[in-house]
Image (cartoon, rainbow, N blue to C red; front, side, top):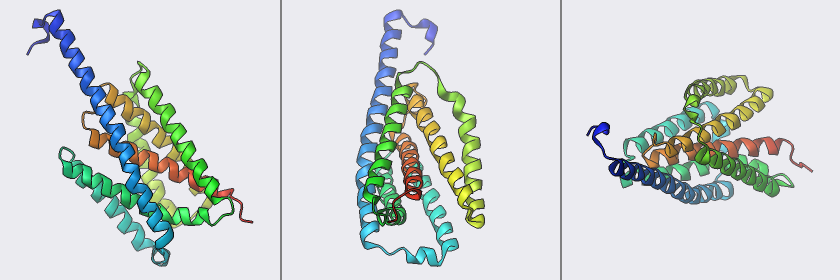
Length: 233
């Protein structure tokens, strides 16, 4: 099909179809993202109130390796099945798993006198960041594809820093990492939503996975930062 052979009405109809598809991907992404929060909350609640994570503290090295393998193995499985309902099921299972893994941080923060308030502040801050960035990304005419290199380099740098600090155990470096996670994840949200709007991303499962991990990282980082200044009575 050659573009130059299209009549004006046909071209307009094609453009309309593309716009409809982009809106459908964005709508399905937001819907699946909202649904994915349900197993996250369930997993976090179960882990916070019913699971003792002492085994992770007893063997931090092995726990770290197992976590990485499960995390990236699950992502690989989701992407492999992103065009089927199995991909959706794997995604929801993944969000439940990450909710469970959030429990140790929640247990620590909720042990503070104002822990509940800090959790709500972290959730509110995460929601505010997401809605502001999604509004910018979906309404601006600017193309944020220039963030591609930043995201790639940032991902590698953060992953290497996470591994390095596992051995260094530096509180100051940990604070820097938390700030880096927030900045990096915010850039990913901006890039991913803009990519959907511009037609670069056509699979809502992949888009949801990327946005979910970014939101998860922002919430986790904010929660830890707020917990540092929490009321220990």
